[in-house]
Amino acid sequence: MEPRRTYQDTHPFLTFKAPTTYCTLSYKVGEAFSKCQHLVGTPLPPMLAASLGRMYLIKGAQATAAIEGNTLTESQVQDIADKRSDIPRSQAYMKQEIENILSLLDVIYDEVGTEKPWRLTPEWLRAVNYQLLEGIECEDHVEPGEFTTTQLTVGDGTYRPVNPADVEHCLQKLCDWLNEMIVFAQSDARDDDRFMQAFFAATLAHLYIAWIHPFGDGNGRTARALEAAILAHTQLAPWVSCALLSDHYNRTRSRYYQRLDQARRSEENVTKFLFYAAEGFVDLLREQITDVQRLQRHTAWINYVHEVFQRETQGDTSKRRRSLVLALREDQQTKRSDIRRLTTELVEMYVGKGDRTLSHDLNKLIELNLVEGNPKVGYRSRIETMDAFLPKLDGSFRFLMEPETTAEAS
Image: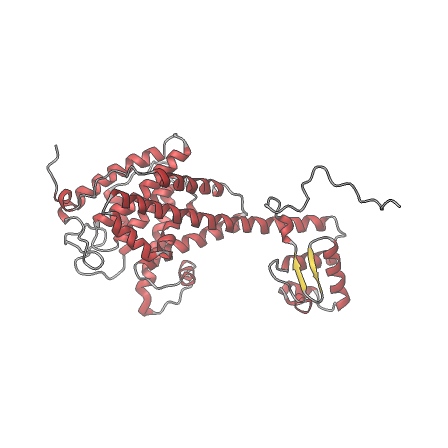
């Protein structure tokens, strides 16, 4: 029998067991699994997919830094990722924090691409913490990538993490416990059961790193990086969704701190934290699905417009009309007088053309059911013709059409 450790008396909530009150939580995690399945393998043109994925990872990087007080905006993080940032020297440390997070995301991405099964180790956690703190000025007692030797206090000083003498023991115990769930999540069991284990491993890992607080600084970022890494390595959520939880925590920061603080008080509160995480994960997955569907819809519209014009006479007139309809917005009317200036391409195409040409073009597009409008209200594209499966039906899918109306009998 192992000798009793100090943390067992000072931190009895470090049980290394998952809570058993799973009922409502299971439904929400199941919903998250369903949403991930919607996204996995969704076809998008490669450039669009890469752009969308990059946007979500930048959101996650900005969010995990913002939770710790980094005030750089999403657009500034985008500039840093694109190597065109002009952050002033007084904010260079915040830029370094972002660069470290982005670099770490690249490391995790590369790890997932290897054939060797990933297992969590204290050494992996130390390497992550080192990378997150590299090049950042820390307090004297902080050694990046090294376990703390100083008794820390968290927040307003009301929480004291485990005794430094217990840190290494607790982390090894945590790794052993989480690896059991990770192994199951990487097995050939049912996908929904595997996802549940992966999600619990990720979110419980987050909690336990926050509770143990093994490093002098960067524990929150390390916890959220570990959470994303577990979701990524179990490969049950799309890579672009693995950093969504950080975005959720940042959007609901006061509730995040509240749930973290409450979780150590009872098993019921641990479940509340997991439910809070699952609920936010579902909400942001839903946002991702909406974004993906919007891009798919736009791609389908472009393809449809090209298909329509393949049946028309080829030449400059068809090219101009095709460019016009693709430049029009769906969600607002464009004044007739503004249409020529919608894009530089249209400006060039209408050089030397009079109003009659524009009228002919618009009338033809209305005839083809690609545009609607008139000179008084303006014009808009009819991209809604792509919306096949909606609750509101327009009669397009009737198998038995209504008979034609005949003249009234005399």
